Image (cartoon, rainbow, N blue to C red; front, side, top):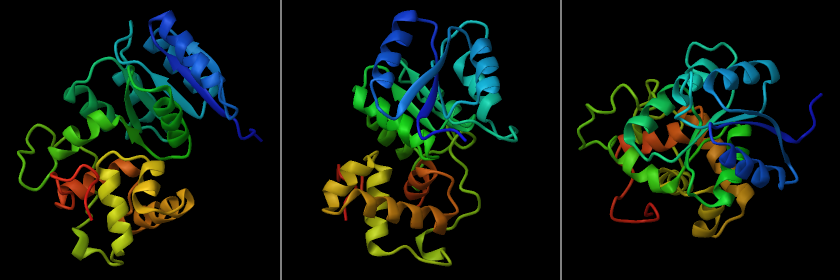
Length: 241
């Protein structure tokens, strides 16, 4: 059996970036970089052979870009998908939408703090998702009930037939709603715990209950559901009560 160490594949066409990411990840006691790739084709080949816990992919790579590599590794037609985390310099909605549509479970900007990278890797390894806070609100606000959805209708995380808050067979509790609003704002589990003055394990328990009630695959789907059904107060930076 594999030990508890999170095994990571890094794919980026810039050697300096790969080295920086490897230094950050290998410094963590629970992570180990097991492979590196400079092209999308190489990334797909190594990922399929090694099946790491997380594949950290750049977007612009030779031979095969990271978005297409994501589809091959984690897309809807992949029978046993891998956890793919996108890290890029390009903060473009088009890239975010396509990455999520192709199965990515996280989207980070390379200029983010090292702590956000390690948290995103841990989230991906455990089947959760994390998107850079600077991207989250802009991305998911397009899914709100009063927005023009034409640009994102095909790219957004699927609602999978879920109704609104009042249509759920098992309604969300008030505290679960508070957690959902903050997740939709891009808050991390640690930040939610501080906001609500509860423990990290309590936040995780609430998220687990929400995920079960919504039949959501990850926190990206939870956030998308919240925006689609008008649960997020855009005037409140913390997601409001």
